[in-house]
Image (cartoon, rainbow, N blue to C red; front, side, top):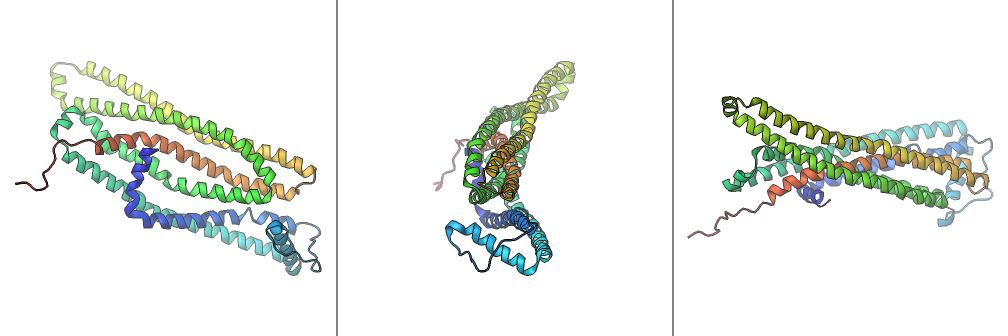
Length: 358
């Protein structure tokens, strides 16, 4: 994670874009939660045969009865305008919330583009500048293919793994936190039950992430070696042909290429497994909620509509956990490339210019 944080230092000149991205992500999360999940309790009241909200027995607001206060006034509103009109209003409000959610999502990505591209551009410039400053002896010790890999594929890996996950790392935790607050307000006991189950899922995901980082590090190192062999082959093609060594060189390259392909199969399989595993774990938790919540319904502690609302909100958490999991895995995978890039920037240059030469 330390390499990820060092890469993020390049975001300093673009904090304005980061702030706008964060703002529209917050709006998107709010509209997303409001669009469907918040409508379910109201729909539950609309489709009831009888709406109980007695104007002669008003409910006053307090922290302890905020839910009853809201339901009471919603019931009065439904009774006043009629169920069909109330349903029409709810459809318009929900549709407007979804539209605003998607507009906010687009604007968040709109301001993310210059942030991400700016970081990569500055990083690429700094690495190139560092290469020009380093002495020739450095390049004699380093294989050119490995350096080219760091300057091209490693930087591309940082862009498409770490920086593409940058928005997810901010947006999804925010969505998760707000949703959990709503769930806790709806049913503290059911929410606490969920938190007893979730750590098991987190442990499984964390184990896969660490394994993925180790495999990614090996893969990037082996890719550098593969590129070095290719560069040496192209540079010495006349000598190879002169000594009739084509088969020997090809055999060496074949073995390295097969080893790299095998390693990349492991990396891709671990990365691809993260999404279905996280989704399966999420669905398992939903089924446990249904069982535990159904038990509370039978005991009269919570209504059936409240359980449906709780599950609807919790099910909105699954994509967030899934996206966050993918983002963490991508950061783990991109950390290997970040380390190789930062290794160039951290290389000590023995040749120092004198500030005030005589």
